[in-house]
Length: 241
Image (cartoon, rainbow, N blue to C red; front, side, top):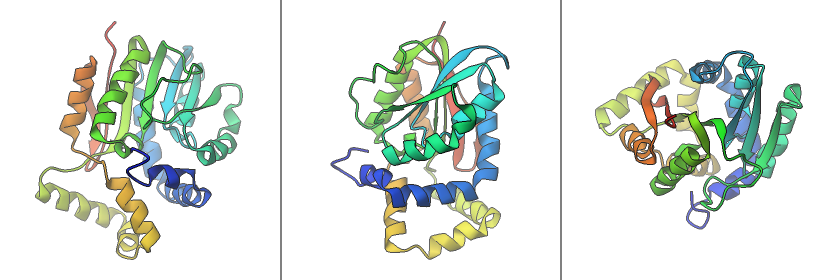
């Protein structure tokens, strides 16, 4: 997701693009809500236990809202580079006022992390954003996340992956189309702008295996694919105690 090499930055800074993204996310909310609840349940905290987590590439805060609801003792830091996303997120996060704050941070940048992000986080989560990053940035980001976690802290990622086998890829598409005919119809009738956004969306999606290797290289333990359904997965691990 290098800003000089593709259109991702311009897309996510666009009010029109964020509105289109929000509408599509709302349409898929029922399914994704279940996946986010599963991710939240993987965090090793008691319901009233106090802990702080970072939601990287948080967008409007869908994952943060799920975790904050599941764990009343938790506090969230939401990081996103898009002012439009942060603006939309502030409206969505109103029920959790006092338990969260937004930080401007560009996942693609590779520079120092903002001082507003603590250096000993209890957990880091990402959702539907890491796939926008080139491979080397994915690898570097996982190492940076490892460095920001307290010993025993967890990192979990919910994201799409690419099939290495064309038979598997065709099966995923066939089953997804059967489950969601509206998406299939929309895919066949994209406008040029919608096609450009889609091409940008899938540009850096890679198979699952290399991503698990990036976690191992960073030093994580307890690495697993904790959930998988066709092309979407929840994987992660923890920083050793």
